[in-house]
Image 1 (cartoon, rainbow, N blue to C red):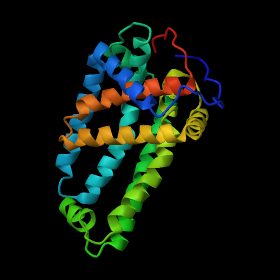
Image 2 (tube, rainbow, N blue to C red):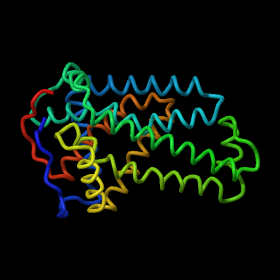
Image 3 (cartoon, rainbow, N blue to C red):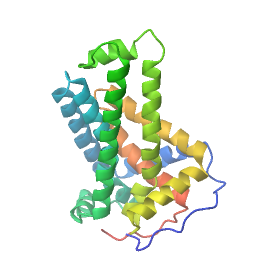
Length: 261
């Protein structure tokens, strides 16, 4: 692990373009193919967890919404070990699950605190969503089919569209706070505040690129969930590895020889 954080990247890197997310996905896919076991194990665990949530809360819409909001927000924390795998791949080394588990056994309090903050953000979204739909909907929303019928398929324009906009507005600061911060916390000894500040600075430097990257992440995660969670087995590690390469490009991190954590 690096002992210091990277210097703030106030200057804009001209090599970062709207096509950069495709190169990050390509590099992430190459990492997954080069060392598939840690990534697929992460994906399998998270997919199984998602299936369990879906089954347990299948008839309770707000419980299901809360569970999946928390799952989607906290899942990136649970996949942070894959940043270490990608970092090792850059030096031609395949890091195994033993190194990933060692990262977790270190009980890095920065990751714990950041994970708690993300969980709090997810809870806030569910509460806002519940309050908004309860006030605006003409009928009570108790089951997933109620939401589909009376909100998503509501013939009157407004409720579903505003709900989606509200979700995007609440998700944007979470994304801006974590897109660079999470890999930086794994890669350096930066404080949570420093990492989040650098993440926001990066989003400010490349707003359109980061908007595209956010949509790519949301789209692939959505596809993974629409396959009954099975697709997450591949999507989770692919996005984790790709996010590492996004971090490296956005912060101009140079490849070096990582030490085992």
